[in-house]
Length: 504
Image (cartoon, rainbow, N blue to C red; front, side):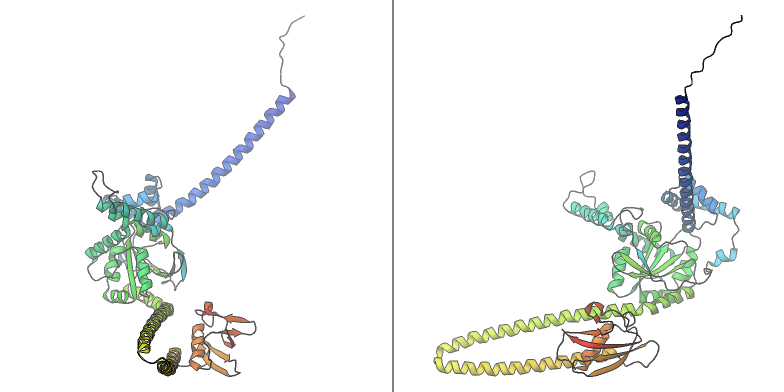
């Protein structure tokens, strides 16, 4: 009987099931990992496309493949690539030469540099742009919107204060005045450098760019009741020299900008100019914009002009902006003037009251001295007679002054209303009913504010009180002091309204 070798297979059912479960779990883990990698690759592709487009817009290179190669060489660090590109003339020239060999350029367009953007200039766009904190910081380098205004302000003030008391000293123990000055006024230093370089390259006929930071320029435009003209300068863009020489330094355009705007300019090579290009989403250079101050670190973007423009095209855009923003600026100026007048009036009234009080006190002391020399009965009678007479004269004088002041105020308010407009689609018919039953009716432009309705009621002189409110019946709405700046149209009173006076 032959003997055969025997083989034993020790694979229990439990061990087999365990291996199947482990391989299944590994399979699903690999699928999940591959899906995450795919989503990450898609996100990186979108980020890569944005960086290429932005690098292409700032440098003026038309070849996206060349831009991608430059960014790849800098490990896709956009700020580092832009810094090296703009600070290395030989690299920029090589990039231009490489681009010239791979793309065709219209010679006439490069020579003139005044080809308008397709579709014409955009209309007036009242966009509210949130200023990132990095725009307001102004001294912490080319960073995105993660650095806040508060950090810059505290660091700048602290650095300046330490320097003033001698704690912020250099390596040798001496005060580093240049470093302290740079940390406090980096934005001003950049603005001064931009103005000096611009005047050196393009002459003295130019917009009067203010030598201060963007936020200070914005506040200056607010104080002067003007809008802010912003120019972002890209030194290496091929259209920049021709645009500056033929358009931005045009005498007619310069005169118009200097008369109607506060002008601020910045180079995208500098910190604040680079940040502003991010905030305003500048996608094409040369880049101009018109903004005005809003609230809560926001600006209203009224208009932007991207790409080369002729002086006539840019002047037309700016004229339209001035025409459409004039009502807002005029209203702000009038309101500020009214506030100043009210403050001055209160100060004059307080001074007059103090003077009258001092005069009364002086007379009282004199009366007491005279009373000691005269007989008590005669002096008391004489004193009472004089006091009564003075009181009557003073009351009559004060009444006459009050009446004259009221008449003057009514006349001023009546003149401020202007002539009554004729009937039309933009004209609102307003009926006002007084507590006495009397009715008054008048027409106003639909853009007129509710303050003008109160001025109209005051100018009629039909009320003996000063505190009252204009109220509508259906639905009942009280147009109080918080709504005085609303226009009739915005308040829902156009094209006609019926209001009655409610005494406070």
